[in-house]
Length: 294
Image 1 (cartoon, rainbow, N blue to C red):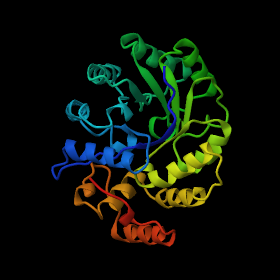
Image 2 (cartoon, one colour):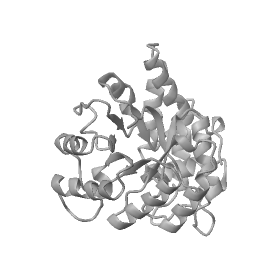
Image 3 (cartoon, one colour):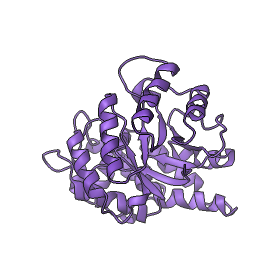
């Protein structure tokens, strides 16, 4: 088991005009985000429109991702509402030597801790040689992990359950487990989380804040004075005024029109919101000109 440390982006998926997945540009984007400062990226997280992209297109990307120069730096999001499809997608990824998986519990139905433990148990029984990051995001799936549930899963599967992405923010201050990664889902929790013993972050906005977030992380590790944390939090706060996927795709579309393509029911920002976001970021001395694009 290998603990995950550092700054991770939930990478964007880049689409063609016909809304099929543009495999090459999606991989280029992930590599670019790593080049800008991230230790790695999560492919097919919620920011990557994972629940809207067909499994066949995900498999096509995985078959090409194996040739990426950063193959070892990817976490693959495989959580789907179907247990069988989750396992099948993991098997494809495993056959390509990917080892780490970000898995959210299924959405739609209501359930509790015991059912969640059973869900992950079935996955691990089917694919015992895997490393799973639990995805705690009640807003999207309707279930919020308790500290007790995570502790039970880690006790039952200490080699397989290696961490949690905490986007409900009820765990990162309270969960204390040895050799286990706790990764809040917002830059606003990065510095506080590090002081509490968290391992880093996995966030949507690290698609644009990777350089700032890496500076905060490195300064903490090197015991240097924090000079960029407030700016990092302020940039995050501006994007949080909107749907994060909409805001990020709109912002990147200033560099490349491909980013304007998102899968319904998602959409890009309207012109008023786009102008407001751009102007407010410029007031923070944060500009798209400092970013690259696939």
